[in-house]
Length: 158
Image (cartoon, rainbow, N blue to C red):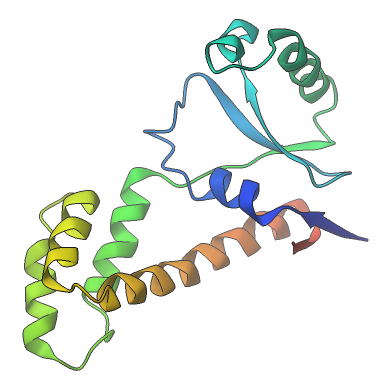
């Protein structure tokens, strides 16, 4: 059986920077029977501060806790992994123009956000950022495949 999963929610969960995406409030889970992706707060009252029902969170949290074989925590990426992918892109053969490559390399000073801003100023057409966006999907797709292989789950995104 192929598990059908909403790509939008899965991407939010898997591509997040776990050190910055509320790591102590909760976690993202994949329902291995339905393919549903849900954020579950560790403490029910935290849900209310985000406009969700504490009771609904409690029901879902208790279900996740009582059926660990039916739910998988979606890991996300560490901050350093995001930086590593960007550094690999910067040093890759994304362009043959060595001068442009050096300008783009000099834009990175330890912050992905500032790099994007500086590159955006350098390239109003967004060609560089578009190439970066395409590039970063490849390693993430491999990580996603590994995640599902570990679960022994065939999947399809919609």
